[in-house]
Each structure stands twice: as structure tokens, then as C-alpha cells.
Image (cartoon, rainbow, N blue to C red; front, side, top):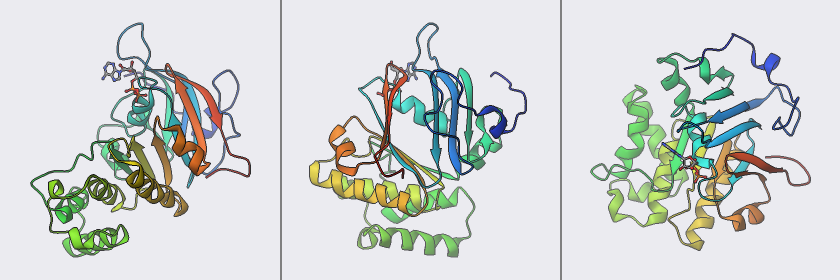
Length: 255
Ligand code: ADP
């Protein structure tokens, strides 16, 4: 992996060229990407020269057709992949420079939701959600309280002893969201979270995800469903062939 000089985020993150941030940098940025490219195969780019900034508590959609680079962008943000070029600062940490031990520490501050839920079928709802706290070593009593509060908040308390496969798709996604939120993450990344759900459940899940940002979490939702973007009137960043082709902020502000 490329090593970078130890610069403070503020000193290198400056809008200065094509692909640069479309808004002034903010002291309360949760995510800063600076000229990031990702190439899985020599000569082809999943992301190309992407510079973006997302504030704390901001909500944004990532849109674009299949293959545009949405998943890759999210993977870079939680350290599942590393940029081939450029730098990324997440919650004040330059993730290109993080050592092996620091990546899991940063991930604890980030919740992730996927299209296919990724729940463990042999565990109950409660156990699936608790797992996120087990791996952090949260004391049992505290973990139980947090799991119960989160399930209640998402209207799942009556399902806590059920197994995921006995639940509807919408309920399974709510469990996945509970698992992502139980540790009160500062960032929530959702990759096509409603891709497997029908229209009614899509809105139910999206309402939940949007309300998460209102509580101060930075939320990025990758979707190819432009009707969601129209409906919620939030910032939307469009990717095409790995490049940012549009960064639309609704009139009246962000978040
Ligand atoms: P999206 O989420 O918008 O559908 P992706 O980030 O999944 O886009 O993919 C962007 C491009 O990167 C595509 O051309 C895809 O084939 C390629 N890609 C994604 N992941 C890998 C990988 N692990 N290895 C090789 N190519 C990949």
C-alpha cells in the first residue's frame, strides 16, 4: 500500500482542481475523500479521481447505474478496500495510514447495511444484534440494555426470539439496521438497503434510515432508485463509470 506523508486533514483537503469538493470544507466533516481512485484490474477504474466531503449528521444518496462505483466507494470508507490513489479521512483518521489494529477501531464507529441483510440464520434476532456488541467486548448487562432499546426503537421487540428466516424481508432489514445502529455509530453506510423490498417496505426502511441522520449520524445510502432521491429531497451524488458527474444539494441546505 502507498504510504503518505503525515499531513493534517485540513492542510491537504482543499478544493483546487477538477473533481475537487463541490462545497467548502467544513470543520465538522465526517468523511473527506481527496482525489480517490480505485483500480481492481490494471487499466480499468472502479472509481476515478473522486473528491467528496460529507458533514457530521449529513444525509446523502449515492446514485448511478450498476457498475458506477457506489459499492466500491462505500467499501473504501469502511476500510474493506483501499484506494489505489488519493486519500480518505473518516472521522478525523486518514484511513490510508491506519495500521492493522486501527482499522477495526474505526469500523466500530461505522454501521453498515447491505441489500441482502447478511443476518446469521442460526441466531435469533436478539443474538444477531447483540453480536455487534459482543465483538466490542461490551459488558453483558449493558449489551442487553442496548439491544433491547434498539429493537424497541425499530419496533422489533416482539420479534427478538425469532430467527431471521421466519421474518418478512422488511423485518429482516430492520434487524440489519438495528445491528448497524446498536453501537450508536457516527456513520451509517447503506448499500441498496431497499433493493430486495417492495415499495411500501422501501419507504418504511428509508424513513428509518433518514431519521438516523436527524439524530446526528452521517448517512450515505447507495441506490439506483431515483424515485427515492426525488421523494426525500436530500443531497445526491451521482457516479457514472467511477466518476462524480453530479453533486446535487437541495435548495435550503444539507442533511
Ligand atoms: P455499483 O455498486 O455502482 O454497482 P461497483 O462498485 O460494484 O458499482 O463496481 C464498480 C466497478 O468495479 C464495476 O466495473 C465492477 O465490475 C468493478 N468491481 C467491483 N468490485 C470488484 C472486484 N472485487 N474485483 C474486480 N472488479 C470489481
